[in-house]
Image (cartoon, rainbow, N blue to C red):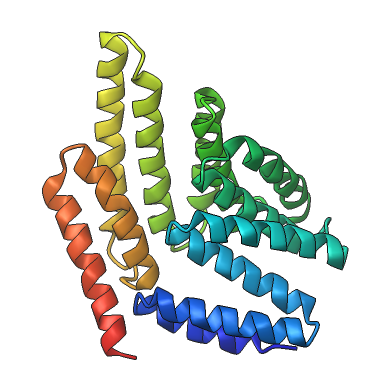
Length: 258
């Protein structure tokens, strides 16, 4: 059995330093080790980590190959009705959405929901992540009303999870994108209403990212970098620049600490 706890610890340090090339080398090395040892559960864990890395790096071909590998391993292991499998379905759906396959993602999110909603407490952060990613796929599919409902479900869950301010900020900005898309074909009044909604959501997202006590760690750096373009697109240029500088400083600190 491969030492997943040790691997994840090293992986976290590489991400703190924004060393994605090192993270990929680590994961590929241990994936081959797991394969050589016939450790299929280890292979599944590593395939999931690789899937997330390739998604963040925009490498669709590799990410989608990991999706196929992970789903095959779930079937091979016979764990398709477990919470672990639901997490795999969620991650696979997220990758498919990221690379323009929202219609294929929605059935995977539905499979994850059927398990999570039965087996997890209603305030579990994994449910919030599921609803958030489901909403993104629905929005990409043009189902704006259903997407708004799913985002609200995500907010309801994550508001009850301590330390979830970065995730809440991302969801607020997802709602910004949704309001913008839904109003695109509307009349002048509809667009004016959307503009007011968007301004309010941007302010709420900023307040969440600025809340005292929110850790300025690698996760925050990733979220800040993800949020900056949304603020910039809506004219918050100074704040977008501040988020980018903050993200770069956190990553630079991580590299110096290696």
